[in-house]
Image 1 (cartoon, rainbow, N blue to C red):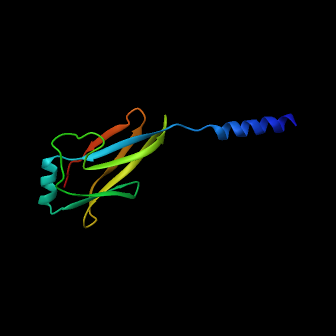
Image 2: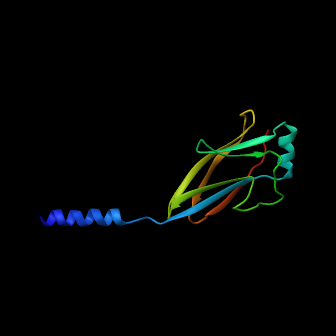
Image 3: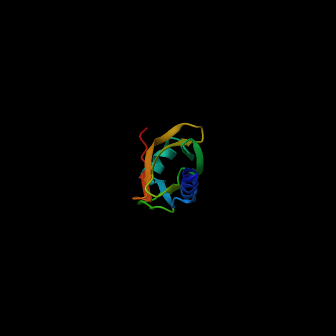
Length: 123
């Protein structure tokens, strides 16, 4: 009987705990030189995929002269994460004809809730 009560209390305690979440953000951006290179190769549109999920499509000439930080950027990816959790994501950026232009991985963590990746064309 005591085991049953103890197990019941344990189950209620475990189920009653909620993990605190936070929002992590990662932006992808490029400068004028990369935008010029994209247009020179006939790239007009770019689509970002994170973990094989389409996130956004932008005009290939959208660019910045310096890192825009989080909240803005050529592409911005936001994810809900548990405190002290680290997540590694893969990304692909394709042009309008589905050719791979950029790819890689990035990590999100509570320690760095706002990160960015500068994209550079390497044709």
